[in-house]
Image (cartoon, rainbow, N blue to C red; front, side):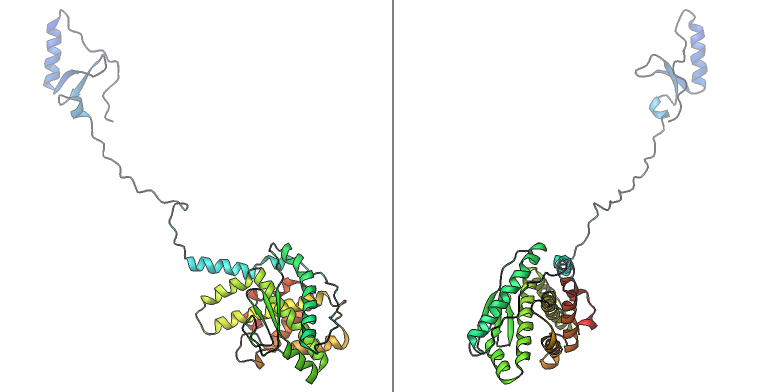
Amino acid sequence: MYPLGPRGARLPRVNARAGLVTAVVVVLAAVGFVVVRQAGGSDDVPTAGGTLAALTPTPTPTPTPPPTPSKASATRTVDPVAQLLAAKQRVVAQNPLYRVGRLPASRCKEPSVRPTSVANVRRYYTEYIRCLDKVWKPVIEKAGFTFLPPRLDVFTGKTRTLCDVQDSAAYCGSGTISMNATFDIDNYRKYNKLWARTTMAHLVAHEYGHHIQHLIGISDASATRTSYLKSVDAPLLESRRIELQASCLSGVYLGADRNYFPVAGSWRQRWLWTISHRGDEWGTQRDHGSSKSHSRWTRRGFDTGTPAACNTFTASAASVA
């Protein structure tokens, strides 16, 4: 602010020597000053131009820049689809099942009943699934999920199954494992008996692998991912990841129980032949994986005995071809 001079300056008082005061006033008037009473003070302060306000400069306001929004207050556009798919990716690729460690042995032997009738086929699968339940229940719960046993549906190939399919084996998302008794009986009677047994052991454990995927949310997450895939081949790739993981989980069970089943000798050799002769080469589309991929992922589960080895969702596309 423009300086007005030192405060407390003593100005002349009017007294008997009026002539002196008059002379002072005349001199001040000659140079353009007048005496005014400063508001709120006891001193008379000289101002130029006749008033204090006229002398006081008006400050020019400094422009104030708009506030810069902070990171917290900045509006971010969130893509709900990308957010959904990221969450589903975590379910399939970082599932808690991969951290449960090695699967314990069920200590179950191969069911002794042979597939010579529908009743025998049902007994075989009932006993096998009971052993699968025994070992997978604590593992599923350890991973933080609720365990529910699957339903078993054994059909003859002439009646419609609960899964509404006519394949050799299938899994319904509602929690049903469906096995075709006609397929097993024919294999045992007409073809190699040991091959029929190794096929039954692999297939029921494979369908149980789908049940595990259902319980831990992988099936649902994968289905959501598939619904957003655009290209023709992408859904087939996603299907191969699901199917090869189920076969790997089948191998995990047998690998953990190999000493009790037992998986040894001619049974083991026939089982290795069986898993290397199942694949898309004998199907109508590339949705389950080649025989090479099927054998590799099933043996990987068998050799390690741990679900962590079955994370097909972080594997390259070439390894799930």
